[in-house]
Image (cartoon, rainbow, N blue to C red; front, side, top):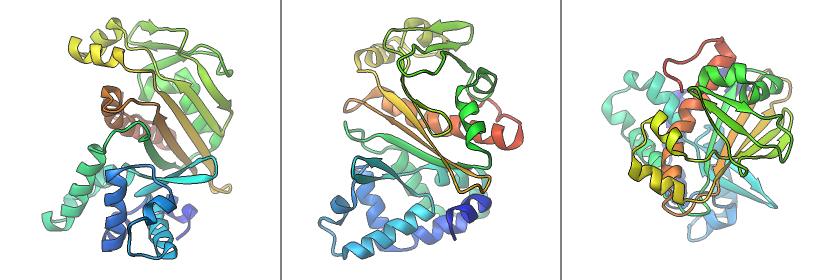
Length: 278
């Protein structure tokens, strides 16, 4: 089934289980869990499999949305993708007995606890029945972001412009909070917000966690928007990177982004918001 067909089926549980049924594909997922963001050459190293076989297995994992890819120069890097696991856990897991979902639960835990080294970006891909224009609006327009995120962005979205975060009646501003890339309907990137005492109080963050967050370098997030051939479906990939080894912020955003992306998807597809989505 091609990407357009898959988007219409919203990645069924059966597709994920079929992808997990093969031991070689599980080995590839294990290697990505040990070190995320590997090229085909790196994944082939040390495996008793031909490069062509590895490519085919990766294609099946990518077709099931368990693996997503990001271009870095001439290389294509492979990342574990939690989206289908979260979708199954949220929507269908009660239909399966405990033994059948054991591998799924193990993979979900692995995705949540993936090692956090300097080169290990958080990457999350989902498919939204919408248009690139609407997805862009959902990422930038305060009328949308406040509904599923609880945040408004004060900026003109020009490269280099400051980005002021407005949340729960307070603002977070800093000269280093800026727009990095802005290609309407295709790609958007900006630096992450500053961790201030006011932000911590509003979000229930204790002093120790705030101190660790404040000591880390600033990260950045990018959104890649791909129109799947006029099918009425958009592929949205979130890439959040720039973390230090053992980053506290990395551990926090890997739980936050799935909820935020799910809230955006629900809003664009149904006009409604998830309860407590932000």
